[in-house]
Amino acid sequence: MKSKTAVKKPNIFVRMGRKIKEVFSELKKVTWPSFGKVIKSTGIVIGVILVFLVVFTAINFGLGELLQLITSIGQ
Image (cartoon, rainbow, N blue to C red):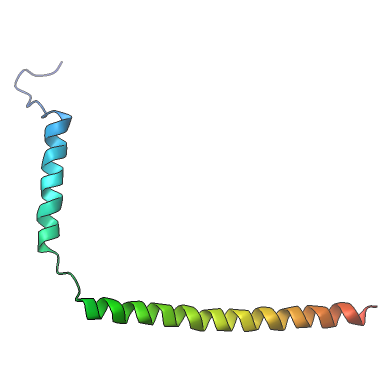
């Protein structure tokens, strides 16, 4: 049996309200990066993506040519 002295949980809306208040409190503590730092990081990410794009395209082209060479030998 449940004891009569058990603490009753607040309803769902009270708990959600507390959680949202905690989230906004934590967001106030966040140190957001400056605009320049965001632009620099974005540039680095785009640069790395472009390098991988070139490398994988070269590998794909090379393997395609190799496949054509192998299949043309059998004819």
